[in-house]
Image (cartoon, rainbow, N blue to C red; front, side):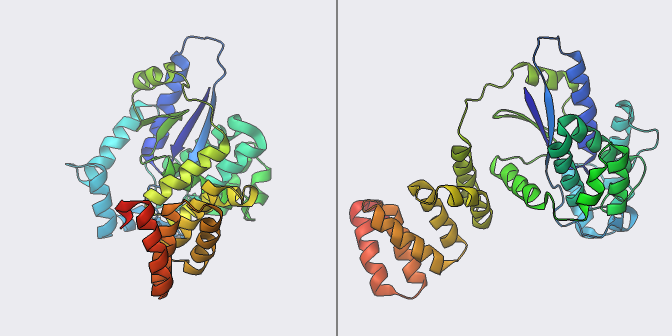
Length: 325
């Protein structure tokens, strides 16, 4: 069974959730099932600057203060920090607890992803532990590559230090962030087994009950999953993200009508009108009965100022599908 943890390493609940998952796994009755825990990237604060800011300074920012109040309604940020510190202590995290920096986590996520590729889930889990320990207990700036290189060395991932100075893992992490969004991952941490998700750092008993249900998802080709992710991102008004997720399919299955339809939608909704026109003209030529493609082509031509050409396609779309009128 593969357990995915979608989490941000600068999220206190991710570290608390890690401890609770470990307790849940330790309480499981042995049944011969091999368990693999894999960390996936999530961003709780996409506005974090590339250069870390001392948290004491960040807390004086009204926008940061407002965001923290949303995380814990009814509590001030200071009260929430005390509450989380007490929960962390109860989970054995400490004795010192508390991040010192508002730090960007992108490079840390790259390090975790690279560790998975080079040494598997066990190495990645150790890197995750050391990254969060550095951030929450040691007060280190984990956006600083020198700190991450030290963490890589301590974790037994010596190759990681040199890889951080390249763009290794960058594209993969950015795509995984999009995939998480497409899969409706909205909380750090979220534990995923197959197609089931458990949001938040739930108590060990709740996690154990969730895991006991196993992976009940049906096998699905990777290509179909990508199509669904791209569709989800389009529905969430992220056409550029959809095109990013769709790119491997465009490269490998450029003739597939479903791939071409989604790509055309991505071009149209991201205002790449020339590419949308080209894709849609080819699509309606190959699928004469595709009324939605004709509708999109008509609207694309309208936006390009070609009203006469647009009218022909819009009329045909409405004739085929009256609700398009």
